[in-house]
Image 1 (cartoon, rainbow, N blue to C red):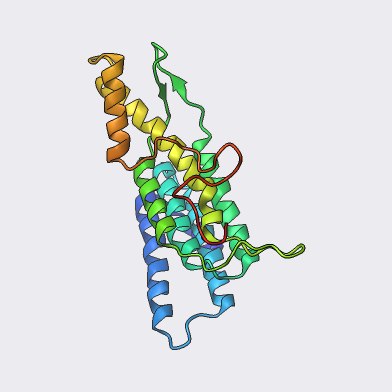
Image 2: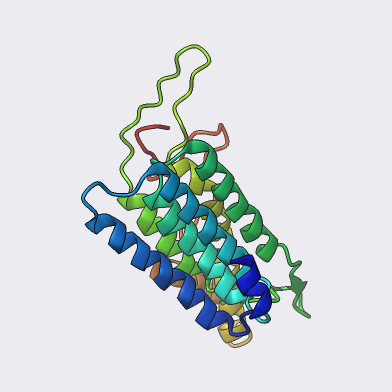
Length: 229
C-alpha cells in the first residue's frame, strides 16, 4: 500500500475519501456473508489499513474537510463495528483517530473586528458530524457492567472510546453555529433576537446547549449513560 501510494499519490481528496469508505464497506459486506465471519487477525489488519489510508488522506492537498469527516466516519462506523476486537489494536487505532482529529481542530480562531464572534479558518459542518457520531452512540448497546474487582477493569466500550470526539464536536458545532448566525443576522438584529436565532439553530441542528458530556463532579450527564460506565 505504501509503495502504491508513493508511486501514484492521490490528488483528489473527495475521490480518495470515497474510495476508502467504499472499500471498507465492501469488505464489511463480504465478511458478513462468510459462514464463520472474519478472524481477529483479519479484523485487526483491516482496521490498521483503514486508519492508515485515512491518515494518508490528510496529506492530500485541500483534504481538511474530507479528512475531518473521514475521521468521524472511522469512529462512528469502523471503531463501532470492531468494538469487540482486540482491545490493544482497537485502543491504538482509536487514540490515533483522536490525535488526528484534534490536530485538524487546533487551528487558532480569529476574532471579528467588533469582537462579537470568532472566525474559524475552516468550516467543517461539525453539527452534521456530531449527528453521525451521536447516532452511533445511541445505537450501540453496552452489555458489560461497570463492576471493578481488585485491579481488573472491564475493557473500554465504544462510548468511552468516542467520548473525546463527541465532546469536541459538541463544542465546535456550537462555535460554528454561533459564527454563522452572527455573520447572517448579527448586524441586522438586536443582540437578544440574535441569541434567539442561535438557540433555535442549535435545536434544529440537534446540538446540545451544554457541550460538556460530564458534570463538574465527573459524572456523565443525563442522556450519555451506558451499561459499562
